[in-house]
Length: 527
Image (cartoon, rainbow, N blue to C red; front, side, top):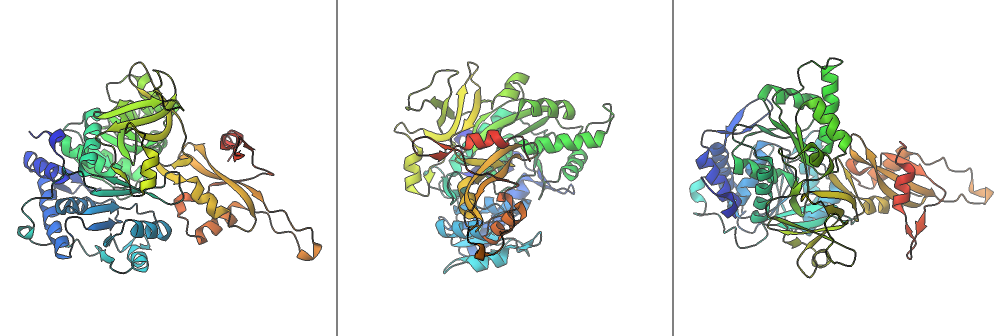
């Protein structure tokens, strides 16, 4: 059996697993149609040949914005075989973000699904395409060719070069390009696989966007452990639960929002009868990350779904940092993010940069083989790493005597909605362009279904004292504000879900900054 810790190129992992598990299922679609590990490899080879015929090879910069499908996994594996530099883009992003990514990544090709769920991705890509950018629609199928035309071997994956670029909102208005190697993504997937302890007898699930960094992280865990997964294009709790029941899924999840969705669905499914069959009888593990999980949600979901809940901590820059395991105690699983995964070195530092003691809170910094290479912006890279080579996450926490990591807050001004990072600054910059708004602070508020919801707290422009100016304008409403932001190109998932109007924003400190913590306290219970 192969040793995944010694493999540095994704294609080698694909090929080794296809040999070791030939004839065994890798993916099910929601109708139960199965494709095996070796069939996925062989199809990816044909697609790699087809892409090579279009001019894609080692080092070619390719953006893809595709739905969560087996074919999308095949595309990403084919690009890995060619040694291309691939940039996955979440299907939710629109012109504002996609245009920035295409330009900043210096993309040479962009792959799109054509029209999907009522939106024409091809039309958007063609509108944004500059000189030299080729748009490839896969609406009628993936390009294929003869694998005999491929180079004898995939490019060396141990040379430290960038092969993946992910974009994350982070704390800035423009997305940040995060450069990974095959080796760093494999290390993240190995960390996940080791923590979860899945076997070939398990059946997992991918109902979150494969274009998220968690996509290849999960697929690598499948390749390491040899288990199959059910793949869904979109997540609808009732439909997903029905598919999982039928196919015998043993591990589900994706983020905190998934736990809540399955909890609500189970309560509806079982009604008033605690003796009714479980929502997913085969389920033994609910796993995910992307946002904090409260002890209350852990207890309620675990009791209702009758399975272990194993939560973890990662980010685009480091897909796996810490992870609970099925062997941890309820207290550890409910109140921590788990232990640092295999290969991750976590250090908590005080504000002066010195190492904090056990149990002492500070900023979470880390090293490890799963850590990204750098940002596409050298200035951001210089800011993010200290002189000892530790990456500063911007998250606050402490390490317990049992080695488990507890997260206590964030230095970064981001909102985590359904596991996705949303830049408060980006929204604030656009809200300020509304003629009725004098100032704004955008904050995240706790939300049972979303993890956090986006709340815009605004002060309004004073009406003119000149009576000749006409009647006073109508009060600003949430629908007025969201219409303005849509017109400015803000994607739907970033739109404020709550609007609060105040006479003034609380400020303090030497720079007279807005005190967002005070606003979060003030509006935490309102909706």
